[in-house]
Image (cartoon, rainbow, N blue to C red; front, side, top):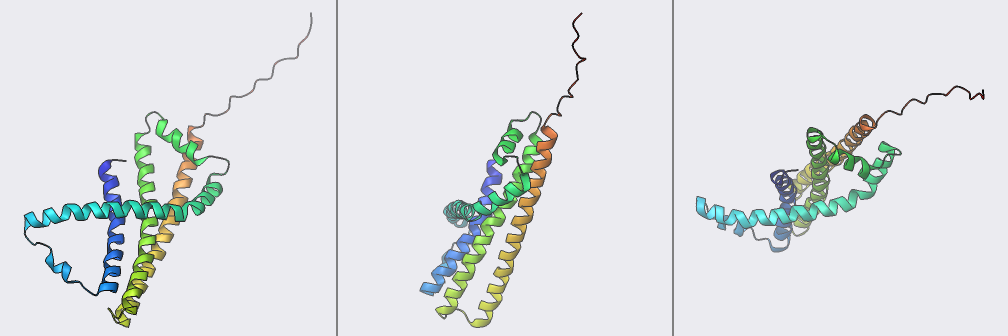
Length: 198
């Protein structure tokens, strides 16, 4: 996976975490005036954007690692069911060490990226729902927008979970096909004529 792709993936995941932090801050402080203090000119916006992206990147790393821990046991169960006797790590190592498999590696990394983004946004959506409920409990927002937003992010969480499951199952099927295709066929056994002593 290229550095640019990894950076973009972590920014996508970290943006949701930043939204959760902003809502949580609003729930406990009630102050959103800081949003209007960002510079509007190009140079000022660029200067501010660099540390903001750094924070988003860091949040993406944290959410990705936490969501990995959340889903690790479920993914292991799916791997056992989807691959049978095949070992996931062994098949992946064979993929990365195979000759002329660069296109297959890109395909595999694209599938893994989808899995990680879905895991991260499932956790993000749950955290954002918690922050929205905290905003309502602190009388920062009224009931109607709270319900509407919570339902929306609840559907997003359900969609991310379903997408994670679909992407994982598809990936395991792809890996099983790769493992079968890369395994050389067994050599036919040739029976020898019976030994006779002359």
